[in-house]
Image (cartoon, rainbow, N blue to C red; front, side, top):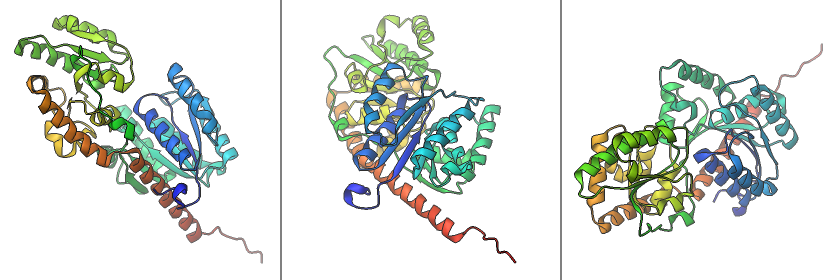
Length: 400
């Protein structure tokens, strides 16, 4: 364990910057911050004040007393806006007061504020770290917006000391659309805790299939509903599905289920904790069109939930030697076939497949492994920065 508890290296002061306290990005920052604190480091956090709702408020209020560098929430817009200047001023002010060793930006907006803070002397002593979490790298290639974001990424490279990619997929996207990293870069997979490897048992009245996540187009839930209707035509009994989550496409998905004639087979529950949601279905379906390294897949694997997922983003990295089970995105026929196969298979066969995947994930996707790698990368980047300062001493004016 490369941290102060094991006596290796001085405690670090780390300031995390993110926009929305929601979803997998927020989960990642919370896990990282809590473990850094547990290991003796001083941590602070800056996040948007307009998103996250009561859930984020409660979580952050609970964490706040343990944040030696403090917690602050300021309004942050998703897209570029003149108000970004006031957010940057806030980041600079916090950095000036706390003098962090590391300013770690998460996501496009958090990464921009963390790196642009290096333009001014107040934060120039810290290394600037960027974890994309997909973000701008998931924009459609070739679009005007996508090109603008990639140009901004290239400009901010000069203010980046360390790039941390949560999947090899996102690292490849960066190389393709931004260019080969000119700064220190590492792939560090997300990890889950030991308690999340305790199996979850489906309820006796569980539906055949369950989806857990945001209700939006990128998640491919319409394809899942199309396949559900098709599976119903293949099997003797009509399969049931539970959709757990919220999002902008909830009403359109209800309409889609109605048009398909499966509205009575589909239940919408709203958001629930992942492990509670897993109890509601016998098989988890992840029909995404785009992902980075989704926590829901890690959590389901740890809980030994039989799972059907698409071959997108970093999901093949999670499945590893079992990635032949994955199906192409937006392929209703292949998804239908896989759902019918799994629904018709024995409980023992599904359990064996789930156990195989759980063992693979346990070996490579733990929180300890993730935090060890990130702290080690911080120290390597700090050493590089120190070496570059020594190698390039400031010029001294000599009077005649």
